[in-house]
Image 1: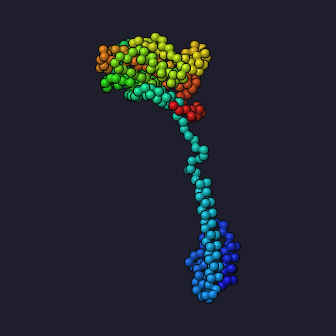
Image 2 (image 1 turned 180 degrees about the horizontal axis):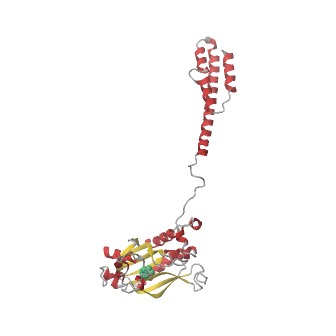
Image 3 (image 1 turned 90 degrees about the horizontal axis):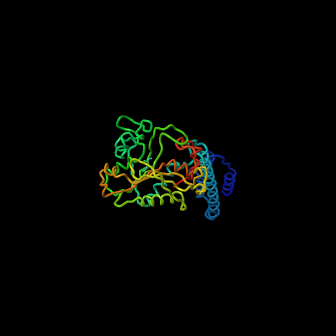
Length: 339
Ligand code: PHE
């Protein structure tokens, strides 16, 4: 019996297991119901009592050896089997994974919105296809104003056009709600212009509207100064130049000190130290009346800026077309851009 166990142990030790088939054959030969180990247990019954202890220990050692050799082989082949299947799975994504980034216009819009949200502005939206009333008439555009001209506006039919500014959302907001208002109108707008590095047939705006009792021009200046400092840095100053919009009176263009050269003069600010970033003004009482708001009780201001313009200044992009071409070589440069 002893010799038999020793010779079986030698066989098991010498058994070469090189794949899963071998491992299964090893199990059948030594560990299965009809295998050598069970035969030994069967023979064990006939072992004289005085030898049982010694033979029992040998059988146990043999059993342990076979079991651990078999377990080790199984583990080895299952690990390499899964490694093999990963290697062969061509549908698995490659590494490193390509990750997207926020589009520079989205990042700029989010930044503008979050600055105004801090002082209580909410966001309003409206349709891109507008009627004459919301885009022009309610905003006090005279019948023959050049902005209504076919050259500027994409008309859809005699009644509808693509909105030329998001001021139309201000009209909708005022018509459908009661003052006070403190809202932003971000969105895409369309103008019939030849596409070049400086102009496009569509671009994006964020406009704002603040209507309440006793709102003054000083409130507007302070609000826009706060925005400019948050957007371009604490040292930023603003300057308002008289201008004209049909829907505001008085109206102004707002410049900020050039944040690229710190107002020392560079080619971005054309050596003036100032860059123009938005139009603004006190909402014309006619517009309030058109929208059903009592102009004797309420007053307010509005402003509007082009997101592309701000993004071009902020990221020093010199061609407007890049924002809508979706060239990954351009977009990749903004992967870390966020608010
Ligand atoms: N709607 C104007 C434009 O598109 C911007 C503006 C908004 C100006 C509000 C003054 C007040 O150019």
